[in-house]
Amino acid sequence: MTTLVFADMVRSARIWFGAFIVVAVAAFAATVPAALTETGLRDATLAGYALVAIAATITLLTVIATVVVVGSVMRLTVALRRRSYALWQTVGVMPSRVRGVVVTQLLVVAAAGAALGAAVGAFVTPAATESALDGSNGVDTFDVTISPIVAAGTAVAVAVVALLAGDSAARRAARTSPLEVLRESPVVRGARVWPRWAIAVVLLAVVAQMLSGLAASAAAGGGAAAILIGPLLVAATAALGPVVFPRVMRLWTAIVPASASASWFVARANTLYAVDRSSSIVASLLVAVALPGTFAAGEGTLARALAILQGGEAVQNPGGTTLLVLGGPVLLAAAGAAAATVMSSGARAREGALLSAAGAPPGFGLATALWEGAIQVVTAGLIAAVVIAVTATAQAWILSTVAPGATPDFSPVTFGSTFAVTTAGLLLATLVPTLATKKQEVPQALGDE
Image (cartoon, rainbow, N blue to C red):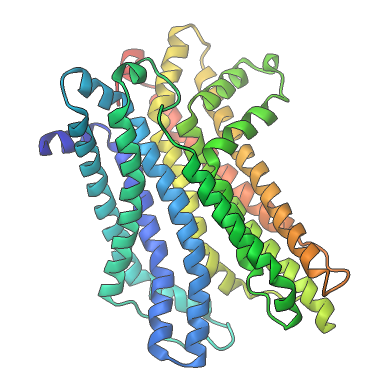
């Protein structure tokens, strides 16, 4: 079994390395709130508790990003290997043995990635955090540290999240009929949607509760919950990703006539067909764009309301603190989107080889791959824009009850800049592997990765 575990990982190194990188980045990002919490609790002063409050906000955003991004990437990892697992079963490997091999592979990647990320974070995070806090009134004098025990605990927590997400996919892969997989069925039968609805309902209930108390909190000069409402809406939307993402893709891409471009037509069909692949990438892109967008929208809308209540100008947090709060989650989301795109390049190479064998002109496969990336990033951008608009509008409506004239801040600069950067990054992550696989012969590209 050990031989099969590592031989298969070597054969599909690109897929497993992508998962490894994402887990490592998640563990690295998690060391930031861990270090701040440890430092603040050790100080046990008013300033220390303020640091813990900042850490709590970062923890929530990091947990959202980790669960969404790491979970989607680990499920994608197993989904991309479904064909191999089906072939194993056709030669006599029992489903229970298949699941055992997959879980062992997930454990190796999760443990190694989390250990590396936490180790790097233990060295880098203290200095980087102190630099980000510089100029923040009251919390810029701390000597931020993270102990080996806390770093190890952070690694274990991230590894557990990765393993749990992958294990559910491993169970489905082992239960799926080999014939269903080998005929390239796009949807894994047996995947349950009701837990996702349950999670989304719980998150929306929390959002409703936070909104109900926002006006009174703002009237008292507070309202810190405003910056958390949007991220929770992002989490609820991501929880329903497999339900929402394909429908949004189908809706807006239908506007473009199929006759406009043959490569566009094929890219749209591929994106809607490969649900696992496209949903994983869109989920990471959504977090990368919507998390900073909703955070800025909530903060800006609250600042406008407080300015009306207090008779001054809207004041927002300094850039260093905002970078500290959002840096880790956004970095993780960007890494997840890029990794998922590169991990999926083998599947795109096989699709391109089939197109070439069918007589497609040179460059057709590249154009199709770029169109796929564009569809995914625009889908994420549209959903993010809706979530940001709902966040700002709902908060402004609630706040207007105590601050008449309060208006929503949609933070177009934050949204536009993050969308532009993620678009460029995703297209680059699509372009490089696609160009690298163009030199492969058709039989080589059609082989199992």
